[in-house]
Length: 301
Ligand code: URA
Image (cartoon, rainbow, N blue to C red; front, side, top):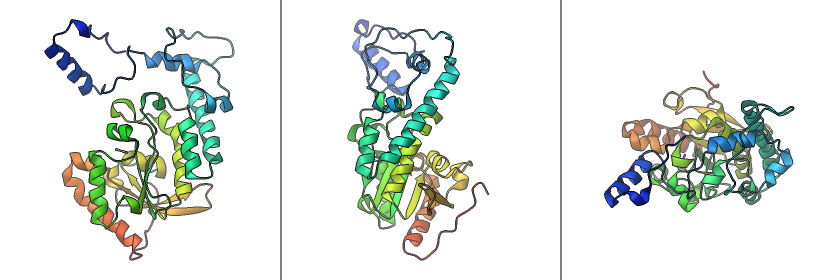
């Protein structure tokens, strides 16, 4: 729980500026609501409400001004909170899978995702960040989740990391129109925190379907989260980068080569690692030019 904030109206401008800086440092950089809200209590309250799978897709956003959330009590036939929360995630994931499968074009998928209320991140994000670039491009790049700039503009990789990504692509004679870009999770996690495994699990069916519908020839996973989620590779990205894997598309009728590389945000923090990323990009260029056939490495070898 966050401590009760001091009464801002009682602070002088300097103290107020200090308080705002402190919030920003703690990752609280947008005002979602006027008053603090305990979302852990919300999650517990949600978890004791049984939800029909088909209802989940059409649930309206919860009434924001509801009174204090009810204290969960053990009730006959109702799972305890931890189990209830896990069931809520698996119900939302099942619903996500059915909804994603029902979309037959990327436009339909975007509309379906925009209407989906099974991921709590939607409530704190400003908007859905679906994709950028050209659907059907030979290369599809997938990152982790949008940050603040992407959340404001509604397109992936438009902030500092995105600008570096543009320069990296330019180095192998590609620009945004030559690629298609998306994220595993399409809503910004508050304060740019890492998406939880539950949030990732609920969003996974959508990105898998997005890859299938975009139908790229090559997939590039930007960073550990994308690599681990999409390719099932367990090891760290600094060890696994540069390796090609077989990505199984849709129902398994085909596979495409998938390359794991370093996330541009990591490269901004660790410029010394750019050398490795450059080697990965050259491998991608060679594969695109048909000069080298990607050789998939067995997972975790
Ligand atoms: N980092 C990501 O993983 N995705 C974005 O869209 C921006 C930053």
